[in-house]
Image (cartoon, rainbow, N blue to C red):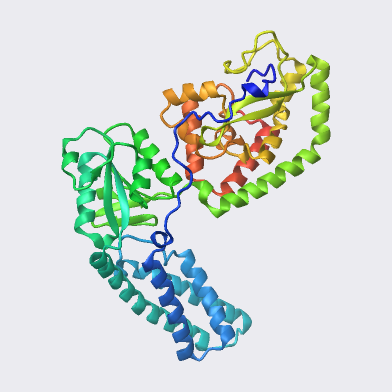
Length: 472
């Protein structure tokens, strides 16, 4: 990228947004966030554990040990998850498997501590008794939950987004079967369909975000779209940002099997989308770790940065630090810092020139800094400030954000998380003058699949890129 001068602070826009995004937070009453069925399932497990402990005659320590093993196995198996389809028989294999895993764990510990012991111990009887008692209680909870949803309409308000045919079928199914816990309150059409006017819910015309806030909706169901998929993707992002549960009806839903992350609304499989990464507790861990690492690295590499700055000064004079406006999370702009690698010129084309490959203004020092990526080191200060993260989609200049967003449907969606010093696209060879569509796909894949381990993998691959420079 061309880097020619430091823009005055008056030229740096502070409030302009390049994409109209929904608010990031929304307060909902506590009762609408608490799922009664989930609470009852937890209570049933606690009561079953205590009752089984009394029947087995275990000590307090043995009861605690069994409780920890059972809780860990059942949490890992998502036995207490929020669900639409309250079917005890459907959930029985998962629940029994979780209890069985806890039984095996405890048995292995007993064998390791006393290999000569034979027969079942009291703590093993406790786990068996828990499995029997908890399943009896869970059957009652599922039956009570279905009755409560039908009788008292204790349903989550839902807005359906999609084409008229599939969206209308989903709405009518929700209304006929409230035992699945969804009450449709609005429909956002993604195409022209005359049938939408006959739906027994509000036809939303003022935007999904406004409808979610107006109706207090907690669930957004994405059906098939008649137009480009980008409109449905935008709806999913809006739902995530407002803290809604997002369910997707797959196009080939008749072939979609029941598996993890798939719920059922009668015969319709609905895939649960993961929420926005920035709303997870692990994102706070990412932020703390990256800020600490960036600050420590700045201190450790301060002599290296000083030597590079001195080389820039000798080659092309002041200033040695180049500042450029970039677009970050939610379309907000910030000032990005780099070591200057391009000699200054009378004309400043840094905001509009895409690449400086082959530019005669790049001297030997500049070429070395760019080839070694040492010119990027001052961006660690952007990480410390909170403008960027270590790992995330790379930030781009405002003029190119507008241009790429107009051409590539999903480019703007990459701005729903903070930008990064390195990213998944960059470690797959997408640097410099490479495909923008591929970059957008990699960036959106990163956001959809984000985890702390994915960040670690990207950092490892980045180090490999810097030292090995593999040819792709």
